Amino acid sequence: MLSFDAQHFPYPSRRNVVYAQRGMVATSQPLAAQAGLQVLQAGGNAIDAAIATASALSVLEPSANGIGGDAFALVWHGGKLHGLNASGPASANSTLQSFTQLGHTEMPKYGPLAVTVPGTPASWAAMAQRFGKLPLTTSMAAAIGYARDGFPVSPSVAYAWQQATKLFRKQLTAPHFQSWFDTFAPERAPEAGEIWRSAGHANTLQSIAEDNAHSFYRGELAEKIAAFVQGAGGHLSTADLAAYQVDWVDPISVNYRGFDVWEIPPNGHGLVALIALNLLKGFDFAERDTLLTYHRQIEAIKLAFADGLAHIAEPSHMRVSVKDLLSDAYADERRKLIGDMARAPQPGMPPAGGTVYLSTADADGNMVSFIQSNYMGFGSGMVVPGTGIGLHNRGHNFSLDAQHPNCIGPGKRPYHTIIPGFMTRGGVPVGPFGVMGGFMQPQGHVQMVMNTVDFHLNPQASLDAPRWEWDSGLGVNIESTTAEHLFRGLSARGHDVKWQNNRLAFGRGQIIWRDAAGVLCGGTESRTDGAVVGW
Image 1 (cartoon, one colour):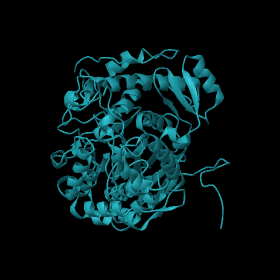
Image 2 (cartoon, rainbow, N blue to C red):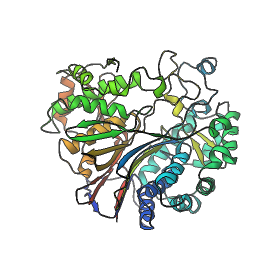
Image 3 (tube, rainbow, N blue to C red):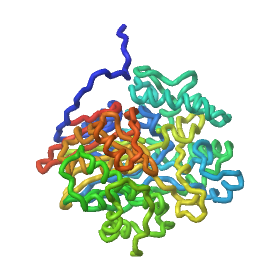
Image 4 (spheres, rainbow, N blue to C red):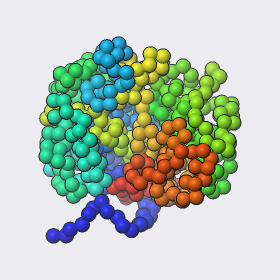
């Protein structure tokens, strides 16, 4: 029998872009990409393929997403871009006082109090009902099969799974966390290439597919979810689940050098990427890998995040408007703060006025940018016994500051980190793109847009290029493949620069572009198990 380390790559490799005409799927796990492609070949459209891929990822990459998470989508269909916000709110019983009385000074990271209503199953049902051609039983068949029959775990997923298991064994010691270990690591986390299966996942996915997620929100599964969370001391109730509805929204955009870049409006933080691009369009960038390019990108994202973290919340609680934050006048004023040296970011006030990402496209011109997540890997550490439903911990992103617009409150949705991206030009779709990874996501979006528009890199080269990530204050992490002179130059300009050797820390992206002839060109993440497949 052959012996080798599936996570060791001593030599650099190159991946070419993938071309196709009849359809394409790009995502972080090869079997999930194939699930989407098979649905296209069976007569489904890009929306059906996105559902197939996303549901498969909930099984194939549980270290980053699951049935109990949230989702967002940008769907190009019928000559128009549609936005889907399937993030869930806090329980009607979640008040600031209920947390402070328990002695919390910040939102818990793990456990029942971090759980908000999951939106992912509702997103699949809503997309299928509005735009799909196939029933969920067909689109989700691959996911159900992988959960029931098993699959060999891919290398990057195995690594993340093992790291999470080590962390959880140290931190999650309360009895209500035992079902996580029973489900995902009864003895240990699986190795790369090892077969893993979960009958609980399969049964839950089958139920979602057969009744369009009704049981998850208003039936037996809802009762199990609520009973488990409340039994562990959380707030989520059957009434909270029954009241949940996805939100179809109008996407927001800025024009960047002739291209319209689109994001989901708040409570997501795609707005941060748009604010940064609005600042950066006031500069000229001749080359990518120069000190001035890096410096200005980093300073712009710092200013954008300062505004985002201060202002983004449930839209009805925001005190400034998206329109004002994206106005050219406000960008002109904020751009003046980008000088020669690094600065600690401060928010402005404009004048009044554990995630997975996938892209799909079909021969009829439909395209989907879709993202779903449990947050921080496996989420809250709470798994509803016997169901495979790993509940997310999105509540952790609420504030416990009564004066902040993102303060926890009944029925409020938190500041949300997962964001799909889309680009058009002159009302014509260019295509979906995204970079998963918490607060890296807007930073990845900015880098992908500039790699494409300013530096004319193909989709694969755009994704392969070294990345940076602003951390906080003056701190910046840069990928170990970045040229050393950029490290030294940024340090000289006052940035607190650190090398980062963990490739997964810089997110995992996918891109599909469509040209004027209808030919699809795709790239996928080389830092993980990514695959782009075409037809």
